[in-house]
Structures are given as C-alpha cells and as structure tokens.
Image (tube, rainbow, N blue to C red; front, side):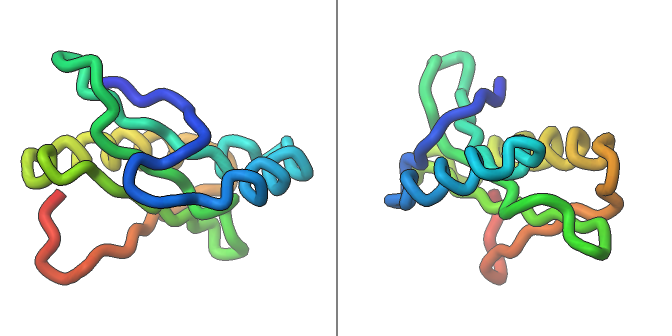
Length: 108
C-alpha cells in the first residue's frame, strides 16, 4: 500500500474550494491541510482517504480524519494507513499526540 496526496475524497463531497483556499493561505502548514488517497497497490485502486484536521494545536495534538470504501472495510487497510500517518506525524516538530474519532465498534 502507498499513500499519495490528493484533493478529494471518494466517500464525501468536500468543499475543495475552501480547503484549497485555506491551504494556499497557510503554505507553512500545507502538510496538515492535505487529503491523502489510500491506494491498494495490488489493484492500483484508490480505496479510501485520510487527512489531518489541521496543524498541531496548543497541546501538540493533531487529529486524523479518514474513510474507506465499503468493499475494503474490515480488512485492516485503513489501520495500516493510520499507523503510517501517525508515525509520520509524530516525527514532525510540535506533535506529541495523534488522535482520531471513530464510531463505537468500528473496525477499520
């Protein structure tokens, strides 16, 4: 699996104009304002997306938002992606904690 940058989501309609405008106004934090497409390498197919919900806050926390296409749900693909994004985030200056919200009982 590989993670690459993109400007959309396969599951939700994002206000990409607002997202892009925010990113252009804050280029120093572009990595925290970018969506990432999750590609299943064996199929060369986008199966989901993840993003940071913004730059680190005053508590040195970042939040990850994510979603996966239904046929790929429950196979651990998003878990693998979130582990990779979390590891990257924790290597960045100003980040000590990575959080994510999920529904009770959700298995990615």
